Length: 180
Image (cartoon, rainbow, N blue to C red; front, side, top):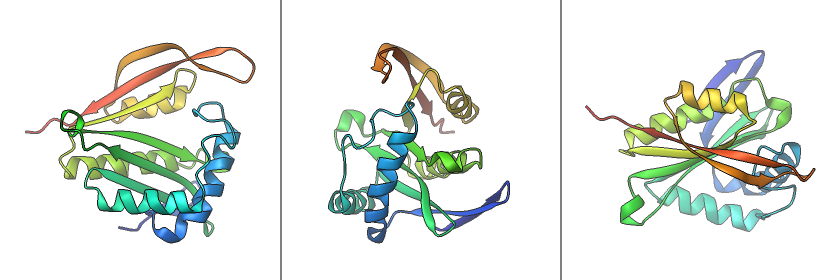
């Protein structure tokens, strides 16, 4: 499922992650973590090496409630997203979504495309609910999620401590797939 998109002068492909992406994904994740405080990790925290990404890609590709996508532009990975499901029966109806895009590529619609492709997959796979967490100060992302049917389900007060010592709230959002 390689899909080509063009936006604002940039052509890129969204496709499932493959084993050969592991080394580059490790480096891209570290870079993205260091570019914004919207995400949970600081640069280098929770490091996943090439072998770790190989295992993650393998596990996700074999699990019917997981999806790992990458966005490729200018012959390199510029973003990725994951839908992570669980095997626990009480949670088997849902997946948790996360998206990551290099700051240099913000504003091209890459995050929106990764989200949309994930929603299409989840709906087709019979996933009833997608959940996510977003920093309260990330208004663009929150608005994007709401446009795609996500509703605010709660706010975690002072959930994240930033590098300057201040605290941010985290918005918990969910999207329920209504079957007809």
